[in-house]
Image 1 (cartoon, rainbow, N blue to C red):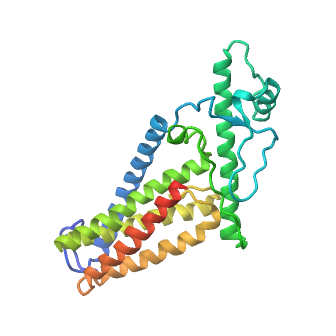
Image 2 (cartoon, rainbow, N blue to C red; image 1 turned 90 degrees about the horizontal axis):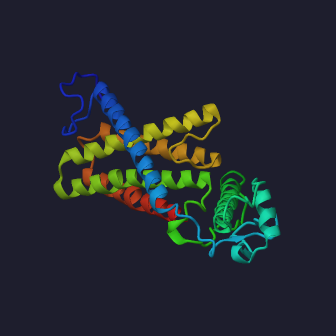
Image 3 (cartoon, one colour; image 1 turned 120 degrees about the vertical axis):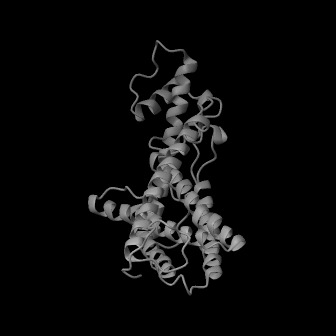
Length: 295
């Protein structure tokens, strides 16, 4: 990069190495674009979750645990053992008291409405247990590096996709939403733009791709650093603290590679750059987030 003046700062059609001012302005522009896009995707996914994935849990499908607190060992979930329709008032009352509801049953409500509240509370408790297991597994695996850990598979949902959001803990919800947002970014920078260049050989697609990836990585790295400073998870990925160092290494390495390609764009093997982006970012990383989100 040089200090030469530029006449069109946000111009992605040029095949030459940018000036320092031009590089900085393009990166900041892409950072702002991704801040807006990620916020939009997050809000859109929340709206979809509330609309399509938050239907009331059928009382005929729900269960409550007989032992409180419910056993929550490593690995697959231990299913609740008392079908709600077969539970006694004493068992339901004990569970609701355990979940912080002292007023069950409310004499002003019909039994059907009261049981729906119990089903909702049971679904939330189920989600809490899965979140607890998952967070512990992440910490044991990435920070403590314990061997032979059992993966925390989620229990089958009582109402399929229609109510799974209710059965999902808050932290896991945030991880799910962030996975969708990051997958969106990967599809843009790792699939769509590289493929467009390989088909058209128009330098604008490659330039937008590289600057877009740098802008996104700067944005994501910034929030990891802020999370460390304030000791609070405000990362784009919404992942456990023990994974933050791995994310930093990943983001900084990606920044170095992309900035290197931008600086050497005049002589860089552009098709090879696109194939690498397609293989690593577009396919491998995207599939990782698809599987992670599904889990």
